[in-house]
Length: 357
Image (cartoon, rainbow, N blue to C red; front, top):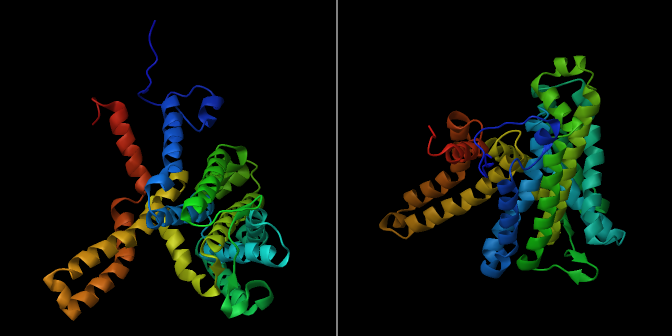
């Protein structure tokens, strides 16, 4: 009797059930469980600074995943993702400060506020696409930025708004060591939902709309419904991420909600991999860690003799700011499918080893 290998060579799926599964092998499921267990132990070994980096990766990973579901999976370009990030932050703060809603409930409520506005903004997607849709979402970005600056009853105006710490059943999750678990829980739930969504009828409809909208319409897919639904899900993720950020830093200001943040979200999904759930987290991790790595390089160079020359110091600081744009260009040229594609190649190499080529 032949033994089934724990590391199967190839992809042999013979039923819809096997095609819909999230974990193709038992080892992949065990790897996820072990990874989550190690992450749960992170506060015991990492300091506050390292935990703050992980928290930012988780928050930005949620926001990037929302944009990836819209742009990477459905093919709808949005340049206003940061506005919905801010809308969720202000919405959660408003419900908590003015209505007394617990933070644990105000965070999803902030996401729902972003969803309602996002679906309204997504209505033009039924008629326009491509660059025209990008300009429409860019207009929404500037409209919401002006709203944040003027609506003192909702956002506190130019002065911003203070956010209370996350609490559940009277227990406050203050500090990086406790808030890390809050972000980790949201990341797990939202990423599992997204992975399941792409295997459902709605998720496959998203991909069909992206690949060829005319063929999708001929097959009976309601383009308006699924485009608006994609906007709703995407903005919900952005709103939840914004609410998590607001209650982490305990303050939210309209000055930080700008087009540059939207471009950063776009860079995350490009670097991580368009249309990939895991690629969204990889891109977020790369974009968060890149400035930290560049800062370490700058600090190291300043400690040498070159650091005493003012022109060299200014040039290094400029190079640090320009490196993000350069990295995006290099990824578009040499790795257009993102980090997740390279990760798949590495896995395929070891899956076929020693017959890899």
